[in-house]
Length: 103
Image (cartoon, rainbow, N blue to C red; front, side, top):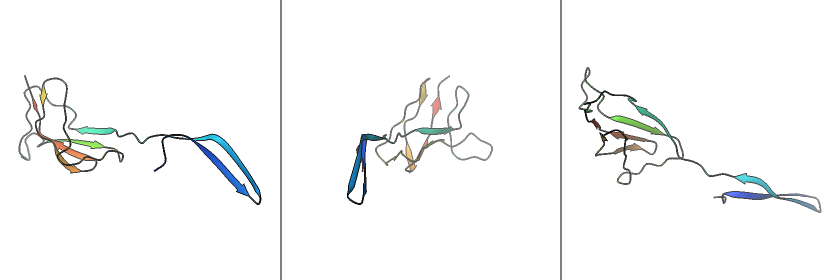
């Protein structure tokens, strides 16, 4: 893996060599959350079991390819008196979280 920061570029042709110092900037890959589904719920909401006409069973959070969720190493918090006691890792870019929203 290349170090983050400015890197030199060197080109060789025949017996000649040319270098440009600090020619390329390598940036870090930034993990980002892309979506939370559902993105809204009323006060007093608690996600429940899968019922066709009921509330969504979990909140699904999707991240970009630079995220690497690992079972047992993920926790989540929400603002606004929302409890999220358990996080289930689906794969490296998805987690599922049951939530309860206080009144």
